[in-house]
Length: 467
Image (cartoon, rainbow, N blue to C red):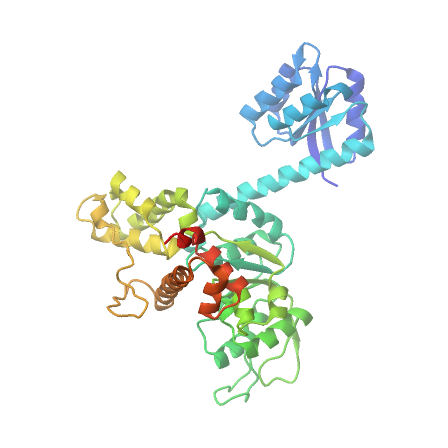
């Protein structure tokens, strides 16, 4: 059970004594106060982890105490004690910040679970705060996560809950949304944090090399295998294995990966014996795995093994309130790197950044900011200093394609595929008069798969019907 210092506030000595006895199993120490003023004095002098306060305090009010606690100690859990006839008031108090309420007469089998729940909720909230601090204060830029948009915060707030269990996680999101940062955060928050975090990009290696990298090989397994080699799965033993771009893994390897997920064992290429390992799997992909299953490119049974806990990262175009935060964050890092501490954005430049669609997401934004800071002639970055891709440099057929050599090949390819796929779907819908089924048949896809793509790209089907 939890062990916490708890403050009991009640103007009746008998209630204070009874509550103190009942709280014994969950409290390391019980402090008491008989008024709002006395309670605030205790809180100012000592660290307390929970307050149990009566709504009616004689000359004072539990509501006044709650309001003052929320002002001065906003995260401190407060459980209110109410009479039978004040439930509506108690519910209103919860809206004002109370963590929970219990009714008189106090009963141990009711009070203790409520207190334990409130302490657990406070501990989780503390983990979320610690996560944000850890991610914001990490020593390397690649470990930093920045964002306050509701869609992004929902993912961030779930990380402590997901990190504490060993279930497989599938991180879904477009290229450049920060999938590896989320995987690293899950590892850093987990009981496995002291063990290795091993990342492998499944789409960056040819099939024969990927199998050897993942599972290892025995000496003599193939021409250049002169010695035994431990695979990355074994290297991650006790820790976390991050399988990036899992949607690109070849079918032949999907079978072996599925067997590993089922049995917890791997057999090196050319090896005679299996090796038992204990790893937590976090996989990620920008692909629509449902469509890949329908196309026969991805095993359905492997998908369900991976998709135990899905986390969906929103694209930057759905986090427009985060663009200014991310841009300033990227500029702060770049200032140090290029020794230009005075460079800053003009309001017009920031407005231009916020209005952009960001098909390459956070990674594209960081590249744009870095280039602007390097090439800006003066101490300010204006709108003309921002080299934004307006889509004219790319075309479906590739005619007149001008590659941006500041962007890695894989990222540039993903951006091209993204734009082409969206343009194709819009054209198919226009040709079909907005009829999704007819457009899907024209594209040679199942209706569900096609509809998923329509939703993924935020295409307004109704608009197609009127054109």
